[in-house]
Image 1 (tube, rainbow, N blue to C red):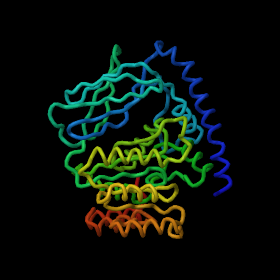
Image 2 (image 1 turned 180 degrees about the vertical axis):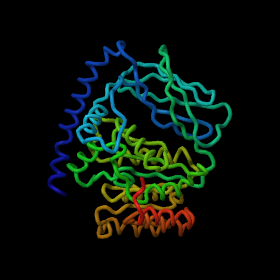
Image 3 (image 1 turned 30 degrees about the horizontal axis):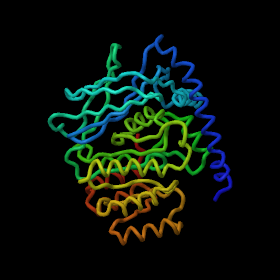
Image 4 (image 1 turned 60 degrees about the horizontal axis):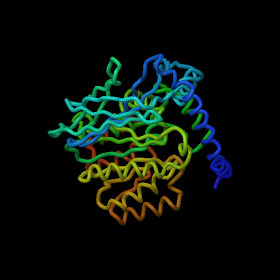
Length: 364
């Protein structure tokens, strides 16, 4: 193992303790003063079936951040990143939500998180909905996006870092610089990602859901959401991680947990799994194929580390092939699109759209 990576892993417990101590110190100082100002509701993306939906969010003290622009200097982006990371959470706040006439309520925990569970009397129509959230005893409402998965041909589960958004996860120093000094307008997607994901999602019809799983903290939700929207990459529910203990460790357990939830929540839905070779996506997805036999249509791994030469990855590819699932090591989005077209997951016209976006001008 790389000695730098080994030293980093050994230092993780101390780093995590320091991060938690700093975060709790700031929160304990400002939370008693929350009555002096307004509270901020940060909803994430609700998701579920026509028979039940959950919507997670967070209660925070307000923070001042300017809207992202392509010309923002790195120091400004860095300050905004610090404001996100050291958010000031508020526990014990009662949050009410209304979704298509259905009421739900929850109380935020010590880290500010709350989860609203909506159970309709009659099935909700598939597609995007909007929920209205409010804090009990305070005026004003916050709108939240909710995706109800109805009739879908298949779903897509995708990593974000170095799969959709260029993050340099194979180099810790470069990753930190990229993540902390960029914004939603300056961060770059891989060429062709938008066209490929729009094709898989059948965006115009709103048929196939895309779920994003990332090791990034929930504090960066707004940046990632704005990035996807700005780059015209299909929006979908995100599953991030809590800032603090375990955040800097391996993300295999987090990703396994999310995938298990999705496969169990949608038992009749098959999935396309997309990741990269920078972490352990090939191994994680191979285990998913074995656990949920017959429910994975294809595995696409963006090769950012020379995985074509990795004996472990090649062995996994052979094992999946014997199970009837192709693990495609894709040098770019076009390779994945070619396989998807051959499987009938996207049309020839959609493949040409990916071709143009990869070989032509970079997507906005």
